[in-house]
Amino acid sequence: MAHKAGFVNIIGNPNVGKSTLMNAFVGERLSIITSKAQTTRHRILGIVNGEDFQVMLSDTPGIIKPAYELQQSMMDFVKTAFEDADILIYMVEIGEKELKDEAFFNKIIHSEIPVLLLLNKIDKSNQEQLESQVQLWANKVPNAEIYPISALEGFNISEVFNRIVELLPESPAFYPKDSLTDKPERFFVNEIIREKILMHYKKEIPYSVEIDTEEFFEEEKIIRMRSIIMVERETQKGIIIGHKGNALKRVGVEARKDLEKFFGKQVHVELYVKVNKNWRSNERQLKRFGYSRD
Ligand SMILES: Nc1nc2c(ncn2[C@@H]2O[C@H](COP(=O)(O)OP(=O)(O)OP(=O)(O)O)[C@@H](O)[C@H]2O)c(=O)[nH]1
Ligand SMILES: [Mg+2]
Image 1 (tube, rainbow, N blue to C red):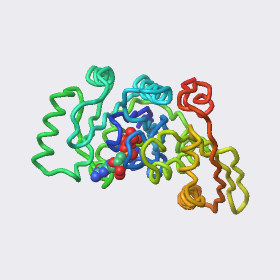
Image 2 (cartoon, rainbow, N blue to C red):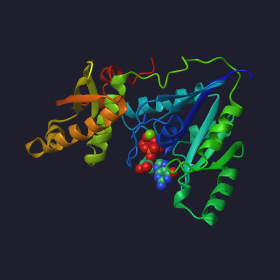
Image 3 (cartoon, protein in one colour):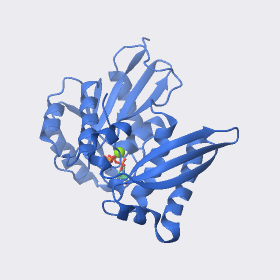
């Protein structure tokens, strides 16, 4: 059989379960997942390798109307995901009505490549609701194949994966067959720390934070890392640190546990908080943190 390979790009509204699906396919926690919208900020590649196929999945930020420079860059990642896809996965969740961006929606319904519309979180619905939702989406996106799934519970995931492999174009592999992603180790350190911040802080704090891992030293038995938690204002710095440093300590403890799982090794992580005024709106800063397409 000829070898198949291609890009399968996952797009959809915030919080519908795109990252949960990506991790389910890859079998690793590559993308962070939280109950808050705008958890994913980058385009993250997850590679699934088989003897005669290589599926390159892209998890992308949920589609929003950008209000500041960072969100603009996030939407640029979504745009590129449209450009190089061999197969599009459009994910919606039970009860959802409209995609928040009409231009993106039009790209989906006029797509010339295969579109798989995954109706997620069906574990939260009943048969009647499910049937009416499938009908609704069949009318809205007539060019798509619709699959009801539960990314969280793994329902219908292998069926969708088999269909993806069927639809892949014939092509040699793009990456070595043992690769899992194109992102460096430090990226995952940043993301795991940011996940803890999303989980434990409220309001605008999670959206004002960026992580920069300045040091990453792997020794025989331990990996030592030093990461900066960047905030936009002095008041936010105080909130991140918390009374007697307890809030920050909790972030450190929880991040370390996950980092040890991720790297399969003992980890020592030092966290610092720094104010980097209005970094979200500063093009130069954004570029430094990898939010640039070039
Ligand atoms: N009940 C249920 N919850 C799910 C399912 N899939 C994902 N979730 C939950 O939905 C929330 C959002 O999941 P994510 O995977 O982070 O969603 P996302 O689309 O990547 O979100 P953004 O990155 O913010 O765009 C999390 O709390 C998940 O646990 C599912 O099949 N069923
Ligand atoms: Mg996500």
